[in-house]
Length: 170
Image (cartoon, rainbow, N blue to C red; front, side, top):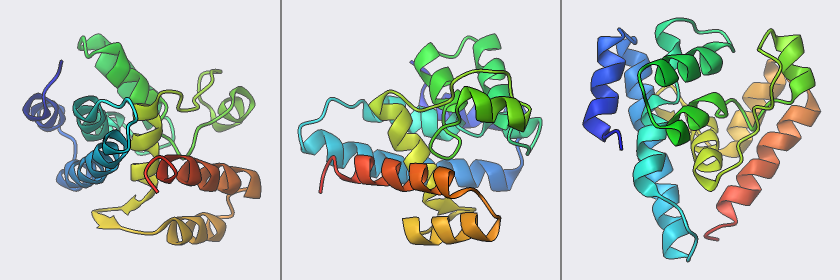
């Protein structure tokens, strides 16, 4: 499996901005904390997969900072032979997922972008709780989303993902 060091090297080689790399490291740190708590509570989760997936979740930001960064990162990862489980984390990390209909409206290839595996859900949730390199609460995330006039349906989805992931160990 791709290692932490290989993931960071890949981000650097593809000229991801230093602030993006630092964001990815912080998301990975939080995601591993969540994965370890879930594992200790008896859930079948792979913290190493979570760490590398979180490090590479914004891989596509070396090409674009638009919503399409998830698809761009997915394509880059596949082209570089990154494990499918990691590629899927990259593809499915945006918010709490995107439906086929929403994807079409956002200019993404028509597909289902909902996180499915426990690892995908943990990374998406951890990303929602990190703004830049600062950890924030789910309430702060939803306030940011409301300020950006994100639909209540999407905000509810983010809250539901938070409840699901945090419910693994609370």
